[in-house]
Image (tube, rainbow, N blue to C red; front, top):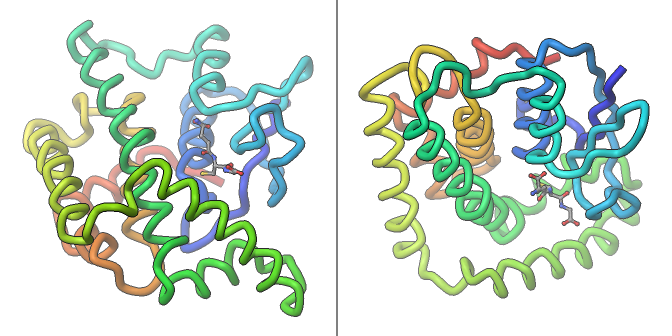
Length: 232
Ligand SMILES: N[C@@H](CCC(=O)N[C@@H](CS)C(=O)NCC(=O)O)C(=O)O
């Protein structure tokens, strides 16, 4: 059986990682039997990250590669889509994974009010005495990465302005159909929805979590995706 190596669940989501939720959605839609195995330590994984799929033969690292593997075994996450829709889908996936992801990480790891709550949920398995020193180093390195990526250099106002235009683009899709590319979830939903849901469920009140959770179009969409693809 396929085994999804994933970060544990938290804040009401299948996993604390939007990429692990995406991988779980891919597996659920593929129709293959699979199970989850939770870990907090990705250091021995091929790219030092999760999700990773363990098959009989090997470890498949990265949600995109997991998708490719499942497609090579018969899954179709874009069934019925035109070439133009597939092209749009690819662009939406990259927007979520290569841009929105950093908003989500900044909200959870960069905000001093939110971080203690995130730390105790993400790293609850580490004894309380050790948790702070261990996680402080991880946090420092995450914040360094965010600074290199550049998102921390925007003012909150500019940052929110940038993502606002992305959210308006999603609205435009959702005015047309219940899911991004039509009447059923396809590949784009499997990346966009987990990232938005991560933003929505960030604990505490951030500008971004409030922005998403007060938006009926987006929250109804997130509920539709969750109902359409039940996860264990
Ligand atoms: N491109 C990867 C991204 C996965 C990823 O960024 N995983 C993060 C958690 S959301 C991770 O494991 N980070 C650990 C680290 O960088 O040390 C995918 O699509 O699977």
